[in-house]
Image (cartoon, rainbow, N blue to C red; front, side, top):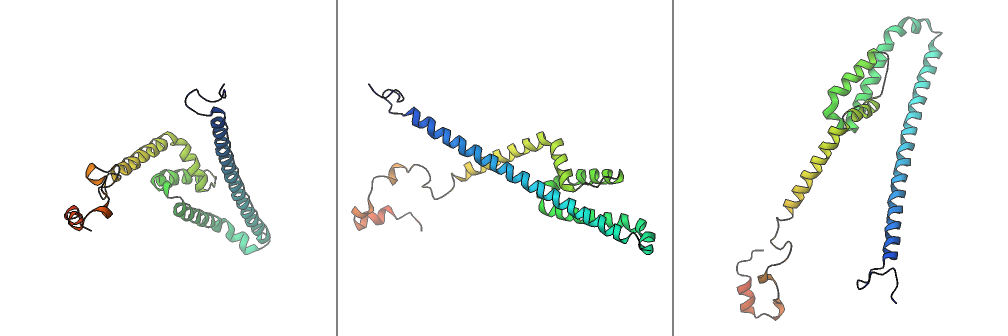
Length: 193
């Protein structure tokens, strides 16, 4: 009697197929989890760096607290320093996050509104908030863009030397090494190189 894991007459080893599929699923799952952990580690590192920067700034302000000139000028300079920090954040964010440019007005409106409420939030975090608001719209746009790219690729696959896909009958079955010189010249008379 044949192996029970083989389909009768087909020769397919379903046990081996199941094991192979199981291994590929495990590999894909492992790769996905590794990427998630790497992303979370990166975000945690960025937050830790932001906290260190804020702590260093608070320490510098505390150090200067005993300076009477600083105490006199601090209320006037603090908003300017905050605006400078926000400008640096904007320049960095928009130069590294190109897909956010179509939502720039909304991001800036939210940033300004939160700043007026006393909340200073990096644009990267505001971008995450905006992405959450527009997730369905962004998903549909991604799907549309993917469909357009696939259609362009499908159309491009038909453009070429004329030998794409299956050759026609005139292209099959003739070995140029067995042809006479006259037959070869005749076969190539309308071909340009």
